[in-house]
Image (cartoon, helix red, strand yellow):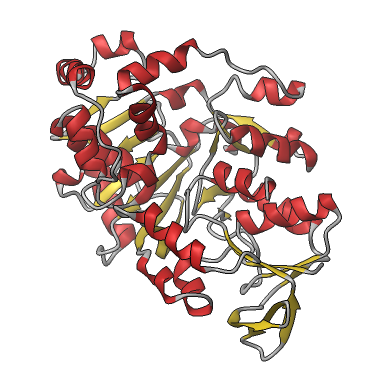
Length: 428
C-alpha cells in the first residue's frame, strides 16, 4: 500500500515518522523548500527569534512530544523554562496585573474578589445543555462576564488571535467544557482532577521533563522539525504544491503545480483547510483564518523592569498590540550572554508599520526607549485557523462526506497545539 501525505508541517512530519517506524511506504509532498510549517526559528545578529510557537507544555499530550524527542535522540537539546515563566501578567488600564496561578497567589491578586465571586457562581450554576457556545458565553455563564473579558479574552487572543464572542468553547477549550459535562461545573471538575494520581510511566528523561511546565530547545523550536526533516529526507519531496486530487481506481491521483502527478492508495491531508478546500470539498473553506504581525526584538543589555513569561492585553483596551513574550526571561539558556534581552511582540494585522508600533508600545508599557540591536518582522497572513461556534459539528459533517481513504489532520481541524498535532499523528 502506498500512502501520501500532503503538507510538511509538524503534523505531516510526525505522521511520516510514525509511518516510517511501522515500515509503511509513503511519500510526503511539501509545497515549499523547507518543512516545518509555522514552526520557524531564525537568528539575527546572534539572537534566537521564534516566528511561530515558542515552546511546548509537558502536561497532557506533551508526553507524546517528549517521547518523539527521545526517539530522535534530541534529549540533550531540550531546555526547561525558567521558574520565572510562571509569572504572567495582563496589562490593563495602564498597569500590569499578575495572573494568579495558585490559591495563595489568588489571595493577593487584584482579581481576588472577582474570581472568588466567579467561582461561587460556577458552584451554584447548573450544568449546561451541552450545546456549543462561544467562549464568552460559556465563561460568562459559568463564571462572569468580567472574568471572560479581563482574563479569558487576552488568554484566547494569545493563542488564537481571535474573538471570544465568535470562537467555540467546545473546540478551543474542550478541557473546560468537558469538566462541566462530566462533573457539572468547573470547580467540581478541577477538584475531581486533583484526586487523580499522576502517572509516573516513561523513561527517566520523560519523568524528569514532566516536572517542568514548559520546554523548548537550545537553538529554538525548529530543532524538532529540522530533525524530522533530516530523518525523512528520502521520503519528502519539496516544491510540490498539490493543485488537484482525483479518484484513480482504488486510490487517488494527485496533480502538482509543476505538472507532475503521483498516485496513492491512502491520502493524509495535513495542509491548511483553505487550501484543502480546493482539493477536496468546498465546505472546508468555511473554516476562517486570522492574521497577525510578529515583531522580534533583541537588545544587548537588560531592558525589562521585571522577570516573567510576558503579558497579554484585553481586547477592550483597544491597544494595537495583543501581547509580548519575554523570551530571554523564559528561556535564558538560549541567550548568548546573561545581559541579553529578547522580546516577541504580537500585533494586530491592521497595523501598517509593525516595528514602529511595537517600539512605541514598549516605550509606553515597559519604558523601553533604546533601539534594539536586532529586529525581525513577520507578517503571518491567514496563519491561525479560527474554530468558530459549531466548528466541531461542521468538521464532523465534512469528514463524514470524505472517503475512508482520505484523512484530515493538522492545526486547521482540532487543535493548534504542537503537542496535540504530534499526538494525533503518532496514533494514526
